[in-house]
Image (cartoon, rainbow, N blue to C red; front, side, top):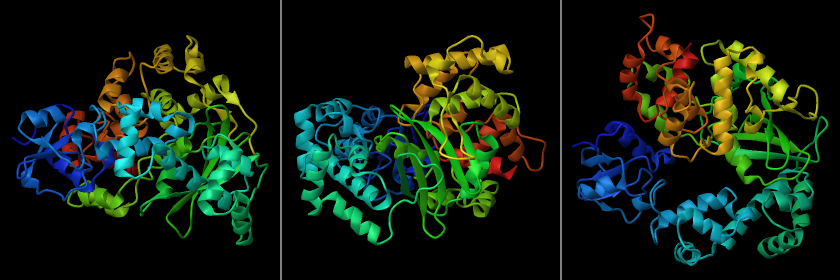
Length: 496
């Protein structure tokens, strides 16, 4: 038996490709039973890769255990996302570290972190001391100090703003922690950096909070493809392409910002300039930016998976650095996808511009050729007059239903949620079909295996010697592309 049948479990070869690449995006979506050892693991297990013939695949830890496998002591599969947290496991500490990296302790307590892990506070502290030799507060402080050090060297931000942006609650605590860690005050690091010519150079009418972020990626990286994709679908007033740069407005917790992204010419770095009129915590922004440009992809592993495929293989060799253009905000992407139902890309873009101009918030841009509107919030689009923007009444009603579902919490459109559950919640809404849900899963939820087989463009691109394939035939063909069908979709779209 290769695997326990379920509609949500990838095919065995696709599962093996995922564990071979140790792609964290599949963590918790299936489990690997190794017949030679009797152990079952998560896709991200650091142990030596088992042979393909020794692997079976299961939709849950319970299914693997029922089949006679026992849990791996290294990756602790019972602590995978979507399963009860493991008591005393290194995997729980790894999950806690990810949450801390997203700023969980910048605004919350260790007690709140423990609640998110499904554990008691004392046990979380015990796990950190066992596995890291430090308590959670010390780990969070290290992350804050590393971020602050980068901001001191790479930006002209005031030291007080850097303290807040890196997660410290007061300037006094920041100065004290920094001096203890580095043996000198933050101002000394700033002076040394300026002597070496570091620091941001402001231009245009820069806002008070102006910094440049260095976001690394694994090469190759096809920036032109990303830029072309966004340019064709840019929402007027919210997004803009200026030369080789991508610009947009973004909402933050209590304010807004303007971002501008451009790759470094000689290094594997994406430079992102962020401008705001008020300081803000950076952790969430950085995570969103990495997802927006798919900076965490493993292009070599994905390319190797398609190397023998007669259709996708040549496309990968032609564009080895292709990425999945993501979304900064899941709700914005969902609304944009609904506007694109059964109309041209240009037509959907026009209506999106009207939507923003009518219901979005206008902001003062930092200079010419910058967007000047914030995309409407969900509660703003809970209304019955959206049809006046030039779309069918039924589509306007669908926009309203999605806005109401997101505002009320029935639908959560950001990576980390259970993708199958969110797709089901979306398709349960009148006016949302499989195409829209798959497209949202691909770009907003970060599912690299999402594949909108009902897309006419994909059906045409997948049939070079015919008019187009049916959705059913395309789905069958795409089984060979798991677990990265999303990248196959982008290659097919790009081929058009």
